[in-house]
Amino acid sequence: MSRLPVSVSRHAIALITGLCGLAMLVPAAAQTAAWPTRPVRLRVAFPAGGLADVMARSVQQQFGEALGQPLVIENRGGAGGNVAGTEVARNGGDGHTFLITTSTTELVNPSMFARMPFDPQKDLQPWPCSPTASSS
Image (cartoon, rainbow, N blue to C red):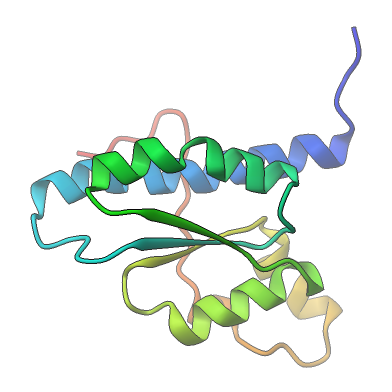
């Protein structure tokens, strides 16, 4: 029985965690008729065609139908997640833009990069998810 490389497994777990956070939005959206009022954007911090992109696109149609708005996937790979993180930090405060990335963006990058284009602790709000999380 073959095992996935450790890096693929970590990326898969991180992406699934992010998508779980998005899944928690669906019941909230059903309760609040005012949201979403326009397409919801998922900025994926990895290139198109990779595992994160494939997993995000695998739920695109179902989430879009549940939300009543299109779910737009935008790939912004580069700089360990800083490219996508910067765009979300600067333009994502609209409540309709979400970042799909690994914890590296907020935990490791501030130590690796002398000057970060944004402060992950202040500019991003993590949305943790676990299998036992409840949306009620």
